[in-house]
Amino acid sequence: MAQALATYESVMSELKARQFRPLYYLMGDEPYYIDLISNWIAENVLQPEERDFNQTVLFGSDVNASQIVDAAKRYPMMSEHQVLIVKEAQNIKNTEPLEKYFKAPMPSTILVMCHKNGSVDGRKKEYVKAIQQAGVLFESKKLRDRDLPSFIEGYLKAKNTSIDPKSTQLIADAVGADLSRLVGELDKVLLSLPEENRRVTPQVVEDQIGVSKDFNSFELRDAIVNRNIFKANQIVKYFDENPKAGSIYAFLPMLFNYFQNLMLAHYCPQKNSQDRVAEWLDLRNGWFAKDYMAGMRNYSGLKVMQILSKIREIDAKSKGLDNPNTPPGELMKELIFFILH
Image 1: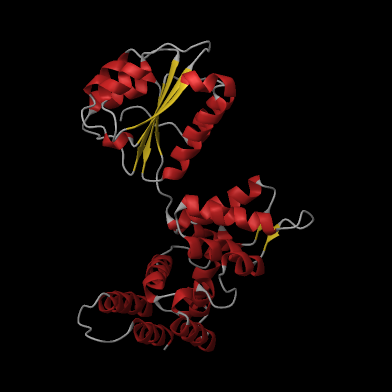
Image 2: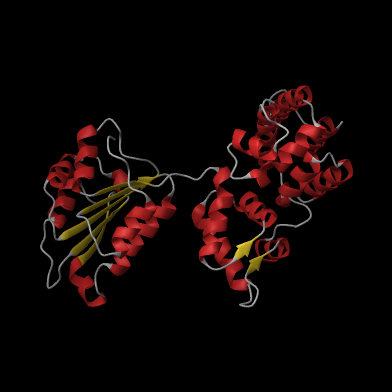
């Protein structure tokens, strides 16, 4: 893909300025942004009275490329544009007719191709080139776990709501990277806040999302970072008694990621500087490096290497390898004991 792909911000900026393109090819593994763009087009390009004759939704599993092209070549009725939205575009097999159409699209048609759970085959260079020449090629990528706090903070800030770092991490850990679900949970939180106090706290998260403010992955990580043996054992015991609150399958990746970064922090040329460690680990700012500063004080480089090896061992056992009958709760206790002693 020679040309740079469009960003969500650039696409929406043009749309809101009513600068429409003949083609919007929306693809990627994260459906959230694909739905946002296609829904905006469906709800805002045409006036309500124009939609009956000039707005059509097709499904790639029900039509072929030639039928899409035939629909796209129609002229609008008593309107400047017609809008044609093709959902499940990833199910279209023979794309040759579409490629020909993209090279000479109807200027009065706004064709929106929604290609979810994947992207255009990069080997189809002429097809990709035709898409980019005709209009917009946008890829909606899954957010990495490390990017979720920024998304949460940005979403709430746009709604004139603030949130503290602990609450941010609680939500990110509890909900995960499914943005549609995440936004649904954030909207639920927003509805619960009074107009005079637009701030999300751990208590609000516990009340609205059901994550305990005292027994959660954030608190477990904090207890391990600061080598708080009593608190860590309390949390692990709580998880063992309340499996829905947390499990070894959720926490192993979190612990591995922390200690992997802690190993890198030990190699930072200026590891006594919180800001330099943040830069070294590619963190957003110095505040996010404080856990690694504490970790370096509490765990030597050698101990971190041993912990990483132990996490891999426990991960294998949790999947049944060399482990005929040890339950997940006991494996978690074994790992926490090893880390803290």
